[in-house]
Image 1: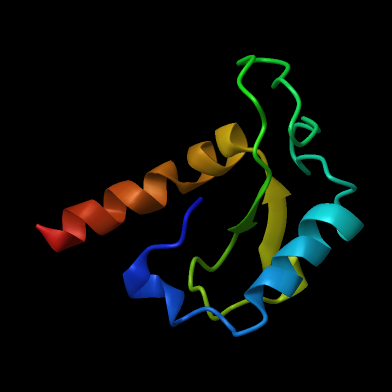
Image 2 (image 1 turned 90 degrees about the vertical axis):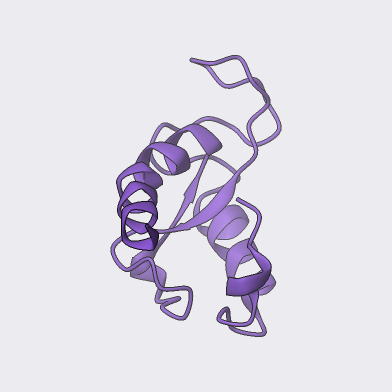
Length: 93
């Protein structure tokens, strides 16, 4: 997921390194939930997989504890974040 300009400053300065470690070293370049391989067709959707690093339990960008992060394909990441995004939109109204 692209990081919005508003949130970019909340991420640690070494976010790119943290994210790369989670996606490539820990997860082996595959989604940790469905095992879809990065840059390959997704086994369910057929879309090209773009592996991202997601905040799982605490959506706060500052919380980069490895236990709070997971390498996810866009399908799993969007599914996980759907409830949080809906709550954020509801609060903004």
